[in-house]
Image (cartoon, rainbow, N blue to C red):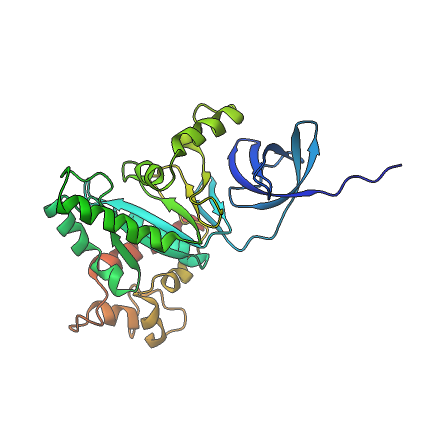
Length: 315
């Protein structure tokens, strides 16, 4: 009896239902199906697969460095695995949700994935100024916040040059990394992907056709190589309006918020919720008169609302 051939290695670059597109080390792409009933692979997974006629079967998912996902009361939505960073793209107009931004940052912190924030539409002076000011606490926390104008209103001149410089600065942050592009619908994700990945729209069409999915571009996640050497990758993801964090314990929440975390050590009680306890280091920082040490009231409200939401979900 002949031995089964050794499995092939590959990278999951797209998926729809129980169909996955796996790329081999030499760049060939094969449609694969998971063995068994569960579809546990996600984009970014390194897998072992066996050929079967003109398709393949995923035999094993290699150990992940990380997995970026969200979870609400009903289901878990996995975005991608083995990431170097998450780029959270928001726009100055319409006004972005600071709560949703914070949730995405917390999810990244929980998986030890570096987050970047990019604020689009810096060509709209007043809305951008307001939004940039709103992001000041995030810059103080040490997050990289980049201005962008993916579709500048001014057709030529200094505004156009500034827009190109901003895009170049972002591209520098993406070089030699695998980056998930995340953001609400309308923030400019598709524009960014098409700007940095020439032919992305055609590639998406090919992948959709291969996976028999007309809805592929809006309902699932897709991996794109930015360079021919295949060292820089962007992963496009569906837009979201809600970002559940039900996989995070409410008592651990402050540890994933860099503006709250340093003050936890000053709390009188080890199991402090930072909501009403006497001698709470976090509450003292919220009430502090020192602007350098102060936790913004907006951020503290996001914490307290999230704590209540996550506490309810456990009972």
